[in-house]
Length: 113
Length: 110
Image 1 (cartoon, rainbow over the protein chains, first blue to last red):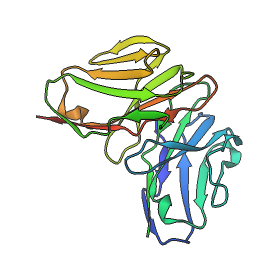
Image 2 (cartoon, one colour):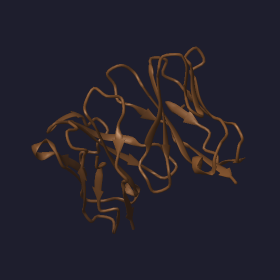
Image 3 (tube, chains in turn blue, yellow):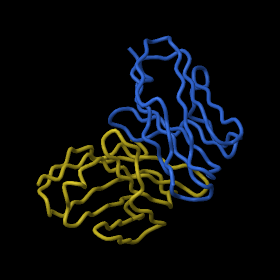
């Protein structure tokens, strides 16, 4: 069974630029999560999708971050414009829904200069 | 006070040692507790999951939850160099999403 795929693995941008990350969850997983993990901290949930609907986006900085999950499969997370403090690893995770276990992808490491 | 706290380490132990990793939390409503292992430049992977108080054992790993003290632990017996990673605790209340601790970095020296 293929795991959660994310791309790109690394991205370096300058502040005020925009960036997008892509996630392909495990096949059949209805629930998809985006987390932000700043160096030395645990993952912080940004947004949770159930199929293509948003379940929880209470911690998503909506003035600059947006996410979508068209057709309930792949998802993209966008930052526009980026700030220095957005430097972090962005993790995507998925599960069937109702499960406790979340399966994480390898993450996208973002550096904002 | 942060909602979930962990000693950041790094914690260095010799191969074969018993390792104790701990988390404290402030929200008494948490009922579900997990331990994740995260290797460098990888996503977290689930190690142990427990509900409410008590112990759970899986091979060399034992998870303990003490809700009265708001304290959870992960014990690793016969630690191996392959156990070198960051260990994250996570917890939640019913119907809520998980809150992660900052992680403890463990290094097992051969």
